[in-house]
Length: 210
Image 1 (cartoon, helix red, strand yellow):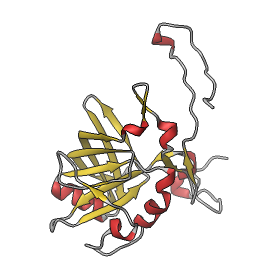
Image 2 (spheres, rainbow, N blue to C red):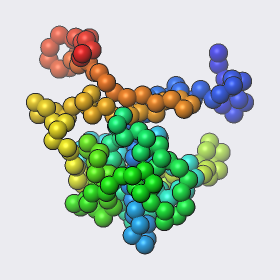
Image 3 (cartoon, one colour):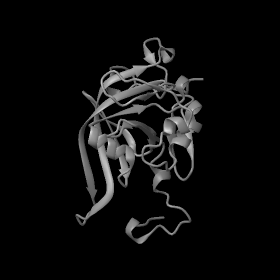
Image 4 (spheres, rainbow, N blue to C red):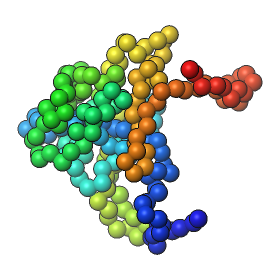
């Protein structure tokens, strides 16, 4: 099939988010102007640069996390794992301003080192970020949309050493969650390694690690 989004897809459910999948979950913690902690998951999230490391999340409507990050100039990305799914899901609820998602989800906070926003103590990794860019989206006609992107530069990295094995972060052991389409999620449970043609050796397709 083929369709133009402006004309509709004709399916019972929009396939867009199912095609762009899996998507890492940006579990973002911030502080508001009164110093109250906020925590929310964003599925439009990813790393966008490596030197220096930067990541971005986007918010459809100006939600608390986006507003707090723009106003304070900082936020923390907390790695969400399969074991933390229920807490993450609770934190996605529509709580009122100032209500604590940490408390609602039964999560303990841990202090950050460089930024003021707290992090999820149980997360295997957390990235402290300072905002370097924020922007509102426009469509093809130049009309402003109810969508914002916030880009942060990583200024501090926390890793639970349980997940450092042979000098590498063991992604499969952490089982990070990803958002797929509709109400579907995925967890990383196995990986395979492959060389690039530019790695100096013969290209190998690799096999899943069991």
